[in-house]
Every structure is written in C-alpha cells, then in structure tokens.
Amino acid sequence: MYLLGFDIGSSSVKVSLIEGESGNCIASSFYPKQEMKITAHQAGWAEQDPGLWWTNLKMALKDVLNETRVNTENILSIGISYQMHGLVMVDKNLQVLRPSIIWCDSRAASIGDKAFEEIGAQRCLTNLLNSPGNFTASKLKWVKENEPELFEKLYKIMLPGDYIAMKLTGIPQTTVSGLSEGIMWNFKENSLASVLFQQYGFSSDIIPEIVPSFAVQGQLSKKTAAELGLSSKTTISYRAGDQPNNALSLNVLNPGEIATTAGTSGVVYGVSDEIKYDPESRVNTFAHVNHSLENPRLGVLLCINGTGILNAWLKRIIGENLSYEEMNKLATKIPIGSEGISILPFGNGSERVLNNKNISSIFSGINFNIHQKGHLLRAAQEGIVFSFKYGMEIMQNIGIDAKIIRAGKANMFLSPVFRETLAAISGATIELYNTDGSVGAARGAGIGSGFYKNFDEAFNNLTKLDIVEPDISKKAQYEAAYEIWKLQLKKAIS
Image (tube, rainbow, N blue to C red; front, side, top):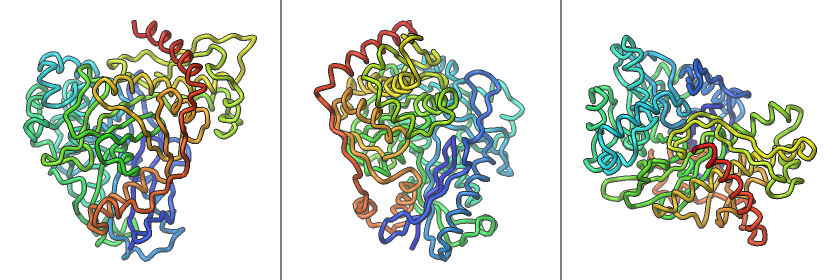
C-alpha cells in the first residue's frame, strides 16, 4: 500500500510517494524548477494565485506516477502540508475570489496591532495565545476594508492546504491547528475566536467544517481523480501547516522536543504541554498537530522571514555561476565573524520577532580592501543563525530551552558553516534526519487513515544522518560576533 504527501510551499510544490509497509520514499518531484512567482504590488505585499499551486501539484504528481508506475488503486491516502497563515477566499461556487495573501505579506500588521490594543493584550494572550498581528484573520479584515465588493461575495475562507484539500474532495474544511495559526481559535473556550470575529465584523459562517488533523477527511471526487490520474477511492486523511508538519516529520510531538527548518524562511519550533506565550507576541503559540483538549500539545514558533531567501538573493547577485555547494565551500574559508561584517537578514517583510517592524536587510562593516565574496556568504549565514539565537533567547524566557534540535538534512543545513554556527551559539546538539515536509505529510496520511497504529510505527524507519555537537572551543568567537551583530540590530530597531 502507498501513501502520498503534498507539500504546498511558496517556492514550489513537492510531491512524495512512500511505501507504507517499509516507510521508504520511492519517488519525489517538485515544480516549478525555478521559484514560484510571488506578486508584490506594493512593498511588503506578497500574493500568489492558488491556481499555481494546483498546476504545479499536478506536474509534480505526474512525474512521481510516471517514475514509479504504481497501481494507483493501491494509493491509500493523501496528506497535505502547506505554507502557513495564507488567506484563500472562495465564493458559493467555490471559485477563488482573489489571489492568496500569503505568509510573508505584511500589509495587515497595523490592523492586528490595533485589534490587540482595543481587545486588550491580556485578553488576547490568555484566549488566543497571540496578538492578531499579521495573521490570516487580520489579512481578511484588510480585504473587508479595502476590497468590500469582494468581501461581499465571500462564502468561505481557507488556508492554502484547505484549498488544496477542497480541490481534491470538493468540500471546504479546516482544522483547529489551522485556525489557531490564523489566530481564529480560542484556547480558553475551545471554540472559534468570537472575540476577534466580533472585533473585525466577521460571521462565523465563513469558517468551513472543522475536521481533525488526523482523520479520514474525505475522498477524491471522481472528477479530480480523473484529472490527477488517481483512484476515487483514495482518501485525504491529514493536513497541517508546514512548520507543525516539519515537526511531525521529525517525530517532534512531545514537550521539550525542538524542530527547526531553514528554507526560504527559518523556524525554530518547540512543543509544550502548557500554555506558554510571549507577552509581546514575538514568538507565537499554536495548536500542534496532536493537540487535544484532554492532552494539550502546543507549538511555540519562532519565525524569521529572511533566511534562505537571503542566501538565494546573494546567489543571484554575486554567485550566479556558483552552486550552493560551492558557495558553502567559499564560506568555510573565512574566519568566524567574517572579519567584521555583520548582516541583518530581515529583508523579506515585517518580522514578528522584531514586533512586526520591517527594518530591511542591513550590511555593515564592509571594507573594500579586505572583503571578498566568501566574507559576504559567511556573514549572511552567520547573520541568519544569529537571528535564530536572538529569537531562541525569547523562547528561553517562556520556558522553551533547546538542548537537542532536530532538522532535515536539507536547505541551509547542508552548509557546514550554518549548522556549526547554530550548534556553537545555541549550545544545542543538532540531529539531522532523512526526511522533508512531503514525506512527513505522507506519513501523516498513514496515521490519519489508520494504516499506522501509532506514531512510533509511522516513524520506525526515520534515520539519523548526522550529529553536530557544539564546539566549545570556538564558543567565545561566535559569541563575540553575535554581540557585534546584536549591536547593529539595536541601532536598526531603535
């Protein structure tokens, strides 16, 4: 029996097929091969056409099916991972009303800040665990204020993964985990966030049917099954935002466990069984994939928007003819601290960790007589790690302390400089595994469909590929560079 995982990112859509019995991934593909288009009509805006996600999903799935030639009648179920916080609006015919306002769009930050003040910080934090900030509900309020004719046509709102599930089944649905990431769930009352809905003037009717993260949520419609070349017997049995799903893919499910990722954006995600929130909402608390009222599992999330996107930008600007591997090698030749260069990686919109300020990326300390490509490349990777460290200090203040960090061996974690800097400056041991979001989503489908009896069975072949221990002998050098970096940040946000 086989399981499919769909990972709907903002850069690409990845599809993986795993063999259920062994847990082995037998094929993966992603589209587009270049980064997916993001439209920015104004600075700080970011939109994507949901139709792009569907088109690229079909292309990646076609590759996987052509490569494996499996009997599609034996594909039991599908799991979906998706970019968090995006807003998809559909009318009564389930047609998309406007491009999705995606996770890194910062246009609604002031709307969320105003609601936080008017509702009251304590009431928001104790009920919603967050400021409404720049999350999905605030994005919808922006549409209500600025595009009232579209808002009038609204039938249901969805997150990106909910939209893909709707395309598969024809039925709009969502989850508690998804609603919490949009700041639309009241943890104190275990219900929709009526306090915010009233503040924004929304009816609860716009929310689709709520289903468990792990459950048979529906079957492929006959029309969609024919379009995709799959069987209409195949079910959808799991969905989650990309960061809770990344934690799932690393078997990070219990209090004290930490997952991280460093793709376009970077995340540190810690699990707790207690209500924990940052009073300034610089790190955010959501319902984890295995959260329930009886057995609370909350994910505390630090997100840095400008991580891998900074590395990709440098590749376009100074390393166009270099592979990422070659860029990483150049960075290793430069001493710790990049001989005085500090880079603040905050060039991808407003940053929650900076109280929703958009300070842009800042390069400082450049000397034209000393510094070369390698210095910029190393300084960028160090700057990304230092932004992680800055956020992890906030997490420590609310009781999330990283001793062991798990990550997939991919993206920035392929760089020796990145992973060694993170281990040294955090003091944590880093464990790297053979997994990614689409494989994790496929395993999630196996859990939700009942193919796997429990989480242990689903992850029995998760393989640790590498361990990076903190180099204590270099800790002082890294800390000195971090202090210089923090000084530059203090100047930028003051």
